[in-house]
Length: 214
Image 1: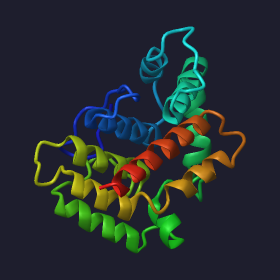
Image 2: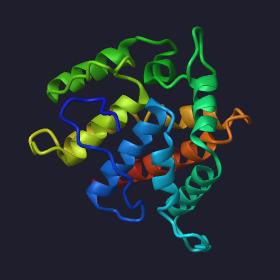
Image 3: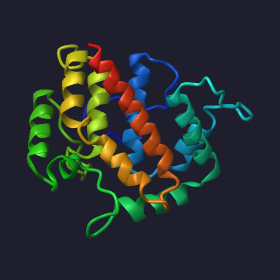
Image 4: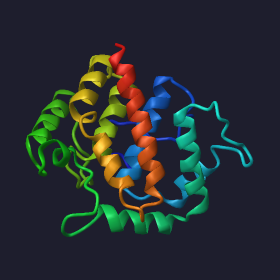
């Protein structure tokens, strides 16, 4: 899978039922992947195989597990081309796309505003830079999730630590992810990305709750 930050680790689909840091990093990486590019068939097959056929969602299952089941179902039942078409129709446009994935738009009302400057400053302090092939600005949701993945799973404990995770999340992701998920879920035709938005919302809500307890 493509990397958006130099020095970040390879993304894999983790066990979303585990609270360990590597599972958190994997899920940030997966969300980044879905919003950076439409999933290819290999990724969809990997997700589809993460839950054995015939396994039911029980009423006592945690909310994150339930939304993961929904992601698995759309991965099983829709080919990569359908995902590609929905991604291009709603996230890509020569004008304004149906859904904007940049934090500056939600926090400041316009693209390339002060929130982007603040994010760039934070990333510079972490010693990170965007990979050459990346065209999105650093306030794109996929880029922000890649930063969080690095802050969780990176080797340098001076950078990759819980304090930096909390500050970066609260400053640059928490203020606007709900509004983004609302925008996706507000478009009925985006049936493939509705479960992705639900997964994003539920996971990031859990992250916020966890950081509040620190």
